[in-house]
Each structure stands twice: as C-alpha cells, then as structure tokens.
Image 1 (cartoon, rainbow over the protein chains, first blue to last red):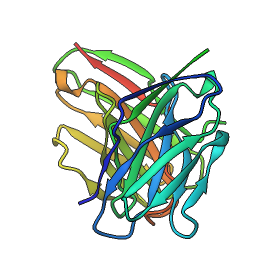
Image 2 (image 1 turned 120 degrees about the vertical axis):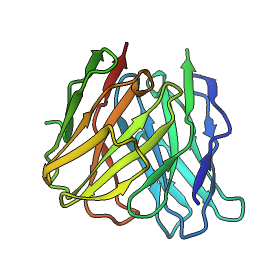
Image 3 (image 1 turned 180 degrees about the vertical axis):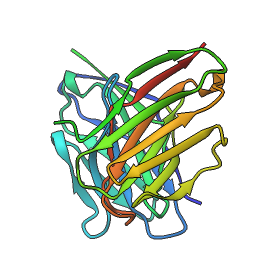
Image 4 (image 1 turned 90 degrees about the vertical axis):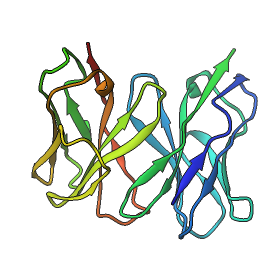
Length: 112
Length: 114
C-alpha cells in the first residue's frame, strides 16, 4: 500500500532564506507524487506534481521538488521564501483511481 | 468564479442531528470526491464518484451518504451526527480517473458537532 511520511511537522524559517520540506514515500507501483499547499482557512492548491520524465519538477510560486527513486523521496524546495509562503504543505502519492494518500503535513512558518 | 464551491463553509450543530453539505464544480470534470481533514490536519479520502457512479468508498460509516445528481454536483449527507464527525470536509474534482490528473479542491466546510 502507498504511504507518505513528512518528517517535519513544523519548519520555521526567516524571510528570504532557503527552505526544504521533506517527504518520503512508499509505493509498490508506479509513483505519481504531488505537493499541495493549504493557506489558513482555505482549501488545497496544487504546487507541483511528478508523473514521469525529468526528476526535477518546477511548480508555482517558485517552488520545485526533486524525485529521487533510490531514496524514495520527493523533497520540496524554495531558494528564497516570503512571508506569504506561510502555510501547511502536504505531500501526497497517488494510490490508483485518483485516490490520493496524504502525508501529515508540514507547517512552514516564515518570519521577518 | 470559484471552480469547486461547497456550502455551507461553517456549520455548528448538535449531536444526533442530520446535516448536508453541498458541492458543485464548474470545471466540466467527471470525477468528484469528498475528503475529510481531522483536527490534526490529516487528510483522507472518503468517497469518489465518476460520472455519477460510486468508485471509492473508504469504509466510511453508513451514516455518511454521498449523492451525485449529476456530474457537476456531489452532496454529502450525514445522519445522526457524532462528536467525532467534527472535521473539515473538502469536496474536490478531477477530469477522469487517471492517477496523475490534478485534483482541484474546494475551500472546505468546517463542521463542529457539539
């Protein structure tokens, strides 16, 4: 069965610093991986997804993620964060038939 | 224009009551979902419908009954509400059932059972 582990429940960072949010997955089939962002009191918005091809995936708002099959990881990165990036970030793996299995989320806290 | 809209956004109700949450999508998608987010922010799929037919039912208590009158709507009715039903319920949609398709989420319905 597919599963996702987000190793950090909270990541505090200063504005304009780089950030990496970690995600490891477990899957017995072909992997489709996703990162979603949830701003306070809002729904989830897709940041980026990996289906196949290049292991470096670029998304919206300057985020990117790298698929690493040998380490079963899909870490999310941004070279310079803004206050507005403060949100909850969810990694997810597709478990077939469009069933997304989510990690427990990482709260990114950006301070001035 | 909201792509996936759900109502109500906030709902406070007493134990034992019956309530419904409505969802509509204007994206022309043929697959719709209900996800539940608990107090620890954990998200889990409840149901999935494709062309009005149920394709995923994740062992949800049968007090929860989804209904899809057409491809653009998926409503969630909950009978005999319990304290543990307090959560945020997200409606979502996608085009088709291919695992790589993007799922678009609504803004959530905050249900509090007292």
